[in-house]
Image 1 (cartoon, rainbow, N blue to C red):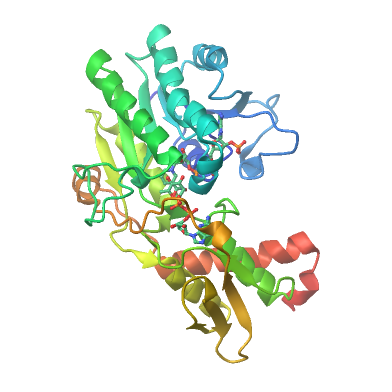
Image 2: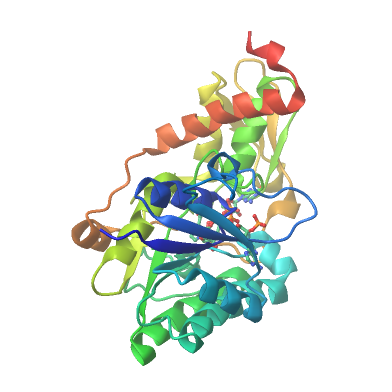
Amino acid sequence: MPEKTALIIGVTGQDGSYLTELLLSKGYRVHGLKRRSSSFNTARIDHLYVDPRSPGVRFHLHFGDLTDATNLCRVIQEVQPDEIYNLGAQSHVQVSFETPEYTANTDALGTLRLLEAMRLLKVGEQCRFYQASTSELFGGIKETPQREGTPFHPRSPYAAAKLYAYWMTVNYREAYGFHASNGILFNHESPRRGETFVTRKITRAVAAIEWGLQDKLYLGNLDAKRDWGHARDYVEGMWRIVQQDVPDDYVLATGEAHTVREFVECAFDVVGKSIEWDGVGVDEVGYERKSGKPLIQIDPRYFRPAEVDILLGDASKARERLGWRQTVTFGELVSEMVESDLRVITKEEGRNDLHG
Ligand code: NDP
Ligand code: GDR
């Protein structure tokens, strides 16, 4: 089989790093778009990077940005990819309320810029396109489980921007015959998850509290329910979506939802701390049962202007057509993230002595 070339937008993110690993393991040549930053932003892919002067290098990085159409055109023209994965986004829901215009520019118009670049450069006929769509599209829909035909009701500037990107992907498929597909992915996490998403915020805090470096964890809405899977499983699904002869849209989800509160309990459980809750609303506190020490407190700053109460997906279509299923359970995911942060935090703080 001839070697394929993939271009990953958002290569430095959680999913970008796992997808790069997957595609390299399949023999792909992988090109990634990375943003210029005043500090290093390649920690998640540093282990994959090889000096470009070495022979047989298959992983290459290009500077670029979804807000820069000429840059996207140039990179696509240079790389001539067989597959483009658009994982680039301002991906934080809470932050999108503070930066709605930037979020729209990157997440909505950025997707349009990519699709237009493919059309203008006439690569759309041979190049396949994957759009990182999201369960946030369902937002306000309380009816569960949510699947491909479920109506959309975005509840944030992020979700509204992603809704535009979703439909433009469908539109380029219908209007120009592009092989363009949406993966409607429910939350997926890992030890590489950004530190300000709730799961990683919790697992980092568990580790820091365990090592005596932090007293308390401040959180927002403990009752939100999410369908949490492992990012490594989900990038496998992305690849399978792109390999289909006919482009289409697919939900990837575990079919199991847990509250933020349950995630907290499960994470503290990994280090042998059992949590007891007392109080209501913003006065609720989570205590360590044994010592009575308050460990979790509510901070209203973390409540969102419009919340998404429940996301729970039905991935039957992906199971039947792609043969995709998740391999990591909720408990395994939480344990892996806590165990990893127990190692990372001590290393960061230079407190490796505490391992002993
Ligand atoms: P991350 O936030 O970890 O990664 C986002 C990536 O996009 C980073 O590489 C980031 O670069 C890059 N990026 C941000 N802004 C721009 C821009 N203006 N131009 C080019 N690149 C940009 O997200 P995840 O890996 O978790 O998610 C991948 C994609 O999937 C995102 O589009 C997200 O919205 C979507 N998604 C994620 C889900 C999840 O649960 N993880 C679920 C459903 C959809 P930098 O590193 O420099 O910040
Ligand atoms: P989400 O992820 O909004 O689902 O978007 P996040 O982890 O930020 O929030 C999940 C839920 O936890 C509640 N929550 C808190 N969230 C954060 N970040 N910090 C807190 O302190 C906190 N306390 C409670 C939130 O209110 C929310 O209900 C993620 C992103 O990866 C998106 O890019 C992606 O599209 C969706 O998942 C599917």
